[in-house]
Image (cartoon, rainbow over all chains, first blue to last red; front, top):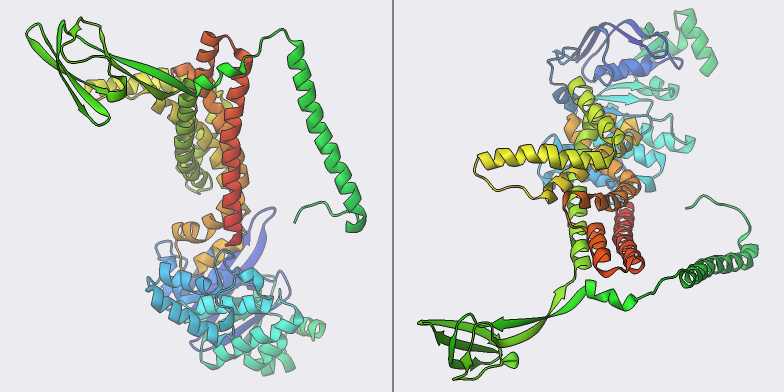
Length: 243
Length: 336
């Protein structure tokens, strides 16, 4: 599904930072991969490289066999297959909830207004926010906004969903509702890559956990092994600090 | 809303009315001293002479061109048709029945009045106001288009687009509008009209060169306003739109520009108010807009004070109307 081979990325200004250093990993169809690590470890950068929001400097990123880093690749087409959910939701504030979910369907998928609306309403129903379809995003709580953002990404019928710290900007009592939606997605067999600090979610839902530090993957493993019996010292230290 | 957050509402009430009174006093004082000043200058105020430059009553006389006789007078309601015959010719004239001055069989010499009527005409100030309004609106429309395009080019990563936009913006913003108007009219205008003449086409009137000069001038400022508006939209908006598979232009049109437009309305209003006033420079290329019209009337009437005050008032009406319209737009887009 997704194959990352020897990917490196350096951020320049103000001084060079090696954000990703020779990273390689694979995400199989239907798999839920959780990426954890201290801040600045490159986990968000890795996720953002997958749909080329950041352009990796070197290596290969293959999504369904298509090379993302090839400049000739139609990246817009790739991105319709790769849904993304952001830490800060990034809903379109000038559009209502249902319009947010409809917009890309109309503009990119060229669906009819009725088809887009039906799809949007059923997705809003799925994330449990159907009754707010006609309000503007600023009238919603953070948890509700994030659920709309998930519905917006799902509306493109993506094959993979990327979650970039989806609960980090939320009040604690709203984290649960967003995680519930993500768990439902995982159970339905969606391929997911999730950057998060929610260890409970990782333990319960992840098929594999990737631990990153200083732009490199330190350790990969199934959650039961990862949380109970980590091999690397760095992983042990990190887990001891957050658990 | 609003920045000041001081004072308890209960105590503020009395103070509020005190300051309202202070404001009223200030206004009254200013008006009073202005009036006092007008009394002190050695000048005869003749406000009654001003209205004629807005509307005036014109009496029109219809005169015969023939030496002959009135052959027929046929009245049909309001209009009367007079037929004059002489010198072997026959001519027909149409006059309003009320102003008929001749009867059948009258002897007519060339220049004799057959009938007369009065009509209201639009005065030179109102004509000038209309020209100013027309030039400003056209320049605003083209200025927005130019500014939008240049603003988008300004933030493009394509060096040809980006550097062209920077050159355009810096060149136009850095040179006097007066010089630009001269160049548009005397250099570009001559070239364009010569080329048109060679193709056997009609000449472009000065008005269009004036509109072009103003539009290009305003466009440079609008470009910077558009750029800052776009850059004020959070990066996440573009990322969210692109991550859904939208192309850059799609994301711009659907997501970024609608939000940016709302933010740039207040500075745009300021720019356009300034453009309305800048249009007063167009008099130098023979466009009779409000300022030139006023100058002409001042020359003939020798009433500079009244007319320049009126001129300023008319500009104020235009700019205030514009500012009200933009505020209305702001409220409307804020509601959405």
